[in-house]
Image (cartoon, rainbow, N blue to C red; front, side, top):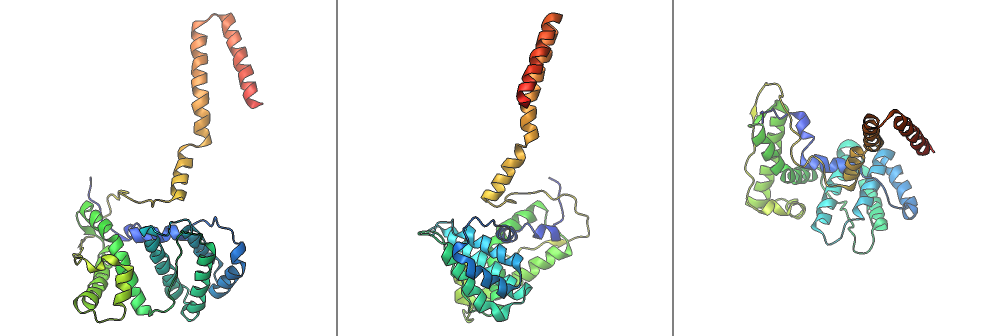
Length: 285
């Protein structure tokens, strides 16, 4: 396999980035009868109908997961980081966040069924601490994938990718000193709750060699598509288009006719053509 240079575009395929992307694209299959007022309140608080629909779709997806699965907790963590990050860093809704989180919790409660996953998001947080916890959470989930891609690329990267690795590891190392070496910061308990593996062995620094070399090859690699029904249904529908089905029926039939034309007399040929015409007419009917 040819070596390639890791760059900005490759960061979009990190495990956490793909999970957040799937949350944004979640389809709402749930009835909204129970959330009419909550939905209106959410749209009013957000002033952003697009993000409101994305949040409701993600909460609907959550209600189909089993409560006892470990995936439920991690899924809720991802939703929490995605929602709060968007509210405070993108939409700048920090002053309304308490009302927004209350509304989102209400929607989650309305969607949930017995023994199904339900998220209950905290509205008490510090912005700086939140950003640290999210960065560490994402880094843990991205670590194996990054390591794999570094091996494939022979540790070659551009400036953007190198800066990302250095900045992210710096945040992780600071959190490790705060919460493992000293356990002195107020955010440590939440960090350990959101990232259970944080208490395990310290992660080694992942680094790459900056190069100006042009990106040669960017293989898709393992795990580009998350395990979702939407992805599987899309792949299936694309692999069996209407044209392919038609050709699979028509071509064998055409081959049989040519074979018969070669073997039989002219009178039989006329009969075959007549049969073919009738068969085609019946198909049109």
